[in-house]
Length: 267
Image (cartoon, rainbow, N blue to C red; front, side, top):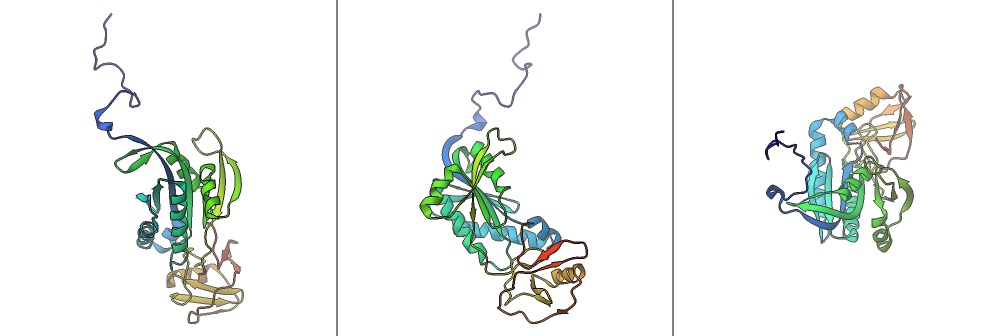
C-alpha cells in the first residue's frame, strides 16, 4: 500500500488551519445596510446607460454626505451602496438622513434599504458573514421609499421615534431560520414622477410636460415624453410650460393595458 505524500491528498478551501494570506480578519459587532435605487433597471432601459451610471454616482455621493459619526460607506455595488455603523442608532440616523436628502433630489429615483445588526468579519475595510447576508436579502423585500429592518434594529427605531410596521417572520434565500422583519416608510417626495422612467421631476425645471384630460404629467426628457405619447391615446394633449404646481395623482391606461401613474410606483 502506498501512502500519499503531503501534496497528494485532497484540498479543501474551507479548512480551519491558519493561512498567512488570510491574516487581518477581525470579528466585529456592527450594523449593516444596503441601499439601492428602486426602478433602476427600468430607468436604464428607458434613459440609457449614461443616465443610469450618473444616478448610481449621485447615490454614492448622497450616502457620503449623509454619514453620521461612527458610520461609513463600505463600497458601491452597481446601483447600490453598502454602509456600516458601530450602532443601530447611528445606522438608522444615516439612512433616514440619506432618504430625506434623496426625497428632494430632482431627477432621482426612490430609495429602498435593508438594515440588520449583528456580528461580521472585517478585513481591509470590507465585511463578510451572516449579518451581511441578512441585510442584503431583506433589501430585496423593501418597496420603493421603504426600509426593511430586523428585530435587532427595531429598538433603535423606537428610540428615534421612527414609526414601524411589523411584517412578521420571513424566510430568506439561503437563510435557514425565518427572520422577524419590520418596515419603515421614508419621507414622501414633494415632486411627481416621470410616468415612463420613474425619475422624480421638479415641475419648475421639467424638460417636457403633458396636460391630458386625465391629469398633468412631467418628464425628465423629450424622449420620455414621446414614449408617453406613443403609449397612451388621450383625447386631449397640450404641451405647456412647466409650472410649480404639483401633479394630481392620476392614471392613464396604455393600449397594452398597463397603468401609467403620475406618481409612479414600484418598478
